[in-house]
Image (cartoon, rainbow, N blue to C red; front, side, top):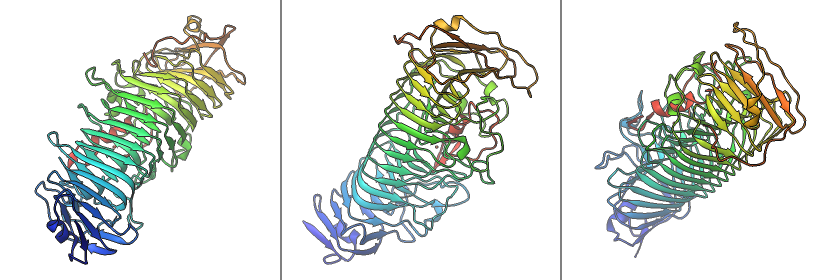
Length: 559
């Protein structure tokens, strides 16, 4: 049966009340100001998003679960909605706003546990007072949503807010989102994500365009997050505000992966921009019973640069891993680095302990260009396979690895100041690049850096590491010793060892033996945005940044 509004029923809710399971409620063009409770498995069809509007009343009713949602899918129903615009509320319930994040979840559309929403061909607006789509189940009852050809956007009148609201929020739910556009607000004080994944999320995102804030972020805490995500063939671009300004904040990454999660990130185009600190940001879990699993394959990543940070202090951008910033296209680090102080402090790289738990992270076949550091691993020597990536025109290094033993086979690195660096700030560091090619660097192919008493060693192959060079140990922290070599042709086998206590010196010798083409079986390595201050320790410029997920407050949930 088809029930037509307003021809047969004056309001949409009255038609819903009269409908039976399987019926269709047809809504003619117009602006309908009402709160909807969809408790039956029906189809709700508008006359097109350009002409059919369901607006939130100024006062809305709290449902039995305590939610303030203008459109509420509940009671185990399966509902299909298409052809509407859901304007952002001009005035939210007072419990949705205040001097601190709200005590109740608020959203434009909500889906409760046990219910399913199929949303197509619509526009969903949201503000700093509400999420766009809130998929909110619980451990005993999962919520579900399938979203196709939907635009999530902020009204032009909305300004950035310190409250933490997102285009789509998933907790104990499943979501399939495709062919959609999600625009999130830039970061300011709090954060705003295109999609935020809380505990118990199983999601698939494909062929979407997501911009602003952090496009995709996962809940970050010390417990098992049980988040599974497939992120395939999307275009993603985060947006931060002022990094060093009076109200500093930056997008900490395009995709942020929580420890213990399982992510497949394939074929995406990831672009940086103003005030963006990393491309893909991965936390390798230190729990052997809940390792981080991630497949990072065939993505294109670009424009992640320190020089894109607004109001940055003079000299903060550069290759010195202990006093300057280098922003990576792909970052892998342990949770222990992420949960420290939210303020960067001098000497941060020499505090804490590297971790040694095996994770299952594969970073292969990616094309990374125009970043400060193409790939950065720190303190996670058993985390990853890093191979067959093409890295070009990095400002500082193509590949960087800190504190541990790392192997990076069969990568191609071209352009930039240095091809690869080994950094020893918390522990000795050894980096080999068997089968890899480095060419066209402006200073040197290989660059070891260390703080006393640790030693950094780097070579194209393990054989090269047996021949080390003598370096100078200098006590004065104001002195830097650098020996450089211009490389315009592919390097063969180079090794260098650094033992300076407080200076980063670089010396290299070149072997006449080309690196073996045989790849050893060793693996690579033995919430956007919160206020922060000047970084004096560059290895972890984005590492601690991810801790925003550990301290942020999300719609009634303290993380």
